[in-house]
Amino acid sequence: MIKRQQIKDLLKSTAFDTEVTVMGWVRTFRNNQFIALNDGSCMSNIQVVIDFNNLPDELLKRITTGAAISATGKLIESLGKGQSVEIKATTVEILGDSDPEKFPLQPKKHSLEFLREIAHLRFRTNTFNAVFKVRHALAFAIHQFYNERGFVYMHTPVITASDAEGAGEMFKVTTLDFDNTPRTEDGKVDFSQDFFARATNLTVSGQLEGELAAMAFGQIYTFGPTFRAENSNTTRHLAEFWMIEPEVAFADLEDNMQLAEDMMKYVIKYALDNCKDELEFLNTRLAEEDKQKPQNERSEFSLLEKLDFCLANEFERLTYTEAIKILKSSKPNQKKQFKYLIDEWGADLQSEHERYLVEKHFKKPVILTDYPADIKSFYMRQNEPDAEGRQTVAAMDILFPGIGEMIGGSQREERLDRLTKRMEDLNIPQEELWWYLDTRRFGSAPHSGFGLGFERLVLFVTGMTNIRDVIAFPRFPKNAEF
Image (cartoon, rainbow, N blue to C red; front, top):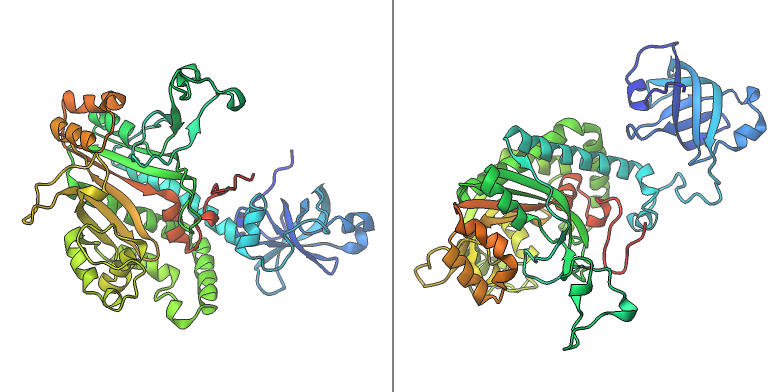
């Protein structure tokens, strides 16, 4: 097997006049002489110069955009602009043909909407080379962050019989025959005849199982796929996405907020330090995209400025009650510019409210705490009623510019009586979560955790505007292609 060199290494090399072999995909072929070759190791191409007089016409015709080739020759100092080295090829071999009449990725600008339709090929563009290199770096940084702090990585179930969020928007998992579904005497589906002998679903969260592990290991995290059968076609929702969910024993809400802030700053800094070329490219791309927008819709910061801004500022911390006062008296609310007007305590904040707090009022990432119990999940620790008798929970949401909610978490309710009473109020069957309640029966302890939607993090760091562009093969209503 011929040893090939990666283009990213050759572009930095000064070992001129040495013989090298590169393999990659043709981006362009000019004048029957200059091949722009890319092997995916970096966004930049290397120029391969061929002597067309010494190559058969049949071979030259097969050097087309998208074709995979191998080229061997001497690495020389480039005489042209835009690159410092090039390869003067002596042999070229076609590894895989590409019909130029049918190959959809021609050397021109393609819209992101079009590229979603050919998601199996969009990795070959510079934009998606950059996006998925950044995604890789962020995933690595997440694992490194928790490993350095002594967390245990847990793989929680993808198939579950519980609904952690209580929203009911779950994909069912079954082997039953839809054309001949077994029924009970009262006409309901007889799940006792299904594979697991009970109704099961794809998980919406690994949190509940993560709490079980935290009660033994002290601090754990999950990082895996989660699923929501929510009929949403927004730019921020997917049916299949990845979640990072740490759970920490003996930690209160303050500890939880600090862990989340430390994690966000750590992974953003890792991307800035290790994806310089990719982020520079995405920064330029976003700036060019911004120029096409009306002045009032343009970003205040460039992508790189926005990332540096998150590192430079301590996250602002305030309660939901304080946020409601700010929003009620805000100009967009007073002038009825918000789509959802804030008129009373207890309102569920929308993305427009979250972004106002971050981008206009505080001009920094914000951590909101102590939300009304009625708009939060059953497992969140109940605070003592406030001066007006209103019930809140020790919840926190971290809000980021351009995104809104990035992280949601809470101190968990460790008191068995409070937890079971809350489950009764919300009609959550205790017998189905007997194992979860056992952690409150045997050695219960204060503990906290949060969830970070990984794609939202990638969306923020890359500056992309649609979440379908930061996951390899997006799943959304009426689409499960590839």
